[in-house]
Length: 397
Ligand SMILES: *Cc1c(COP(=O)(O)O)cnc(C)c1O
Image (tube, rainbow, N blue to C red):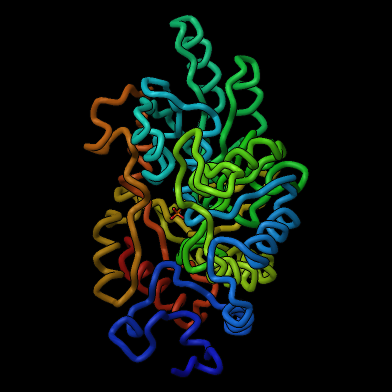
């Protein structure tokens, strides 16, 4: 069996060149660095295919250098890392777990499966992240009720850092730990140039196929407390005790990343800064090319941080623009362009109909009007022009 010897540009952008998919412009397809095949060959030849051996160790070390966290555990997915985070923070049935209303379901899914009760807090209309002022108020109210959350889980939405310093300050007052869902924020920076998630007790990253850096599936849990990561590592390996036979004081998971995937992630990581710059340039091109159209908006980047602009998200005000988000999405689809509505807020999801909630109007409005545009770092300028032309064509004139 032969591997392709080289990856031409089209293959880097489109997962199945030559097939139907090649005609469609995808939202955020994997972008190969070019060194993956070599890394895979070396891994296969080493004989290490299990979630053990040199590749996961090297990948974790590289993650530490990239993010600045003292300890990292590479996992099978970002969702698995979140699950381990909830376990090591001691989440129990009936505990409350607080998250922003506007996020991907995986932020809270593992906690819900553990019997925890999610509470969804509204986001800010400019940066789309958890609102620290609202959080401070709600924590004070929860303290009066005698039911503080076990953990607060803010999210770096679409690769834009939440106001983590303010969120941690609000939580520190009540001794509540923070786990930052930075799954989409590899390479994003917050105040002082610190990497996304830094400062939180735990941070979670994803290397899923559509993220800015991919391992073909994978994630990581990171912390400045090596004891927490050691505990998570134990659970990720079936909670096997150090005996010759299989001895277990508790049950764990098969969540360690495979060497094969770690090798891909390791090959991808050196390209991170280039990928961030490219996605930021894609955002800037959209923003500039659509600046004169009425009724459009974007996620505002705060002066103190640098988003990785994983996805460019357009806000479409139908009254000003002349067409609504869904109209635009269908028009793009008909032109062979994949776009996607912003996350449907979790407090509006049938799965969480019984969850307590606080506000959520901002998140609901962002869902109604938000549209994620193709943002893959391998996208050709001509393809981005195609997207821009379709959007311009539907604007009021
Ligand atoms: C991608 C993502 C996840 C889940 O990561 P997986 O690796 O796909 O499990 C969780 N939260 C957010 C915000 C994400 O974007």
